[in-house]
Image: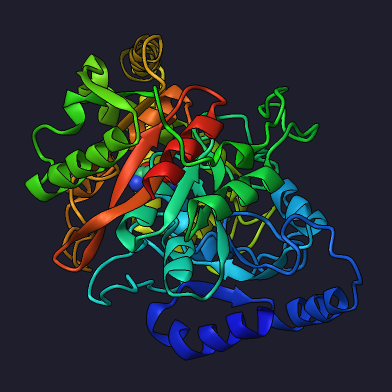
Length: 446
Ligand code: GLN
């Protein structure tokens, strides 16, 4: 499998550009070692896997697709990478992304331009564009992405693969380069729902190195994949099929609901009334957290340092001016502004209050329903370059994925048809720590 993986990468990655760094020598050596194992024990024994480039890998370049980390070689493995290794998966290499995971198209990447394997003129989505494209193009069987506002589910939808954002706290974030710490989660991208459950099984669990990882049992995610959804109650928020959602996208969701109905589930229309505030809330909170998190890139501790400075302050400023791309600078400025004295109460604090209301919307619906279903995105993938000059339309892409991160609940995107030759995604949202039911519904539909 590892040989096949590198063969496929050699064939197609020149065009798709999913990978930033390959770990070929070590991966092949490890695969050889596994060949000698008499009785395979690891859950992911010998499976080729790609890792998003904001997840640190010991002695393997980890760039976040940023100039500022272009030559950064971490001295430790993220917890998820250690867990994959314990389960005997083989890391093939590191996957491209929007710089520091800020974006929805992987066009903000400083080091490569990933394309949608279904049509190379289109974006793969983002920020985990490399993770989704690599799986869709058959370069790896599994990959890891990260999702702060939709970055696993949106590219999974655009590339026609399965992507899950776990419940906040389900998976350790130790070794994930932080973007917005109260929203970030690592999650699996695969072709099939069953594979996805295997990968989540491997990476889940409490971690003493991450105080935000939750002390909850990890159930057997695979045991729910029975194909049975009899008696299951589905809620469909009217806000998710309203304005801005293309008719074909809406139709694909209604068709999917028919499939689930035929298998014994029922559905009703519900409301998540605060959805309209989610985008603004998300950009205030995520940018505020990003402005604090990214202060560590100062030219001293990690990666790039400018040559064009005569004193320390100039060195900080010049390093950041040269090292960060435009979108990253935009977020840092937005966040610094929202947190500054005199504005904090009006912006950051208000956003936190609205976040609570958004979370409550979900809790109210989940009192009577098992899952929430809707589209992952309002449209299929867009053309490369189409939205690069207009950050606001780019941000609007995540309107259906962002509320999930604000609420901290799990959600998956599974392929649900095509529009003009481009894949569409069905989003299934679950209760806190109920990935099992999310998988059950996704698997029954798939
Ligand atoms: N597209 C959103 C943003 O730019 C979400 C990114 C993410 O989930 N990492 O912030």
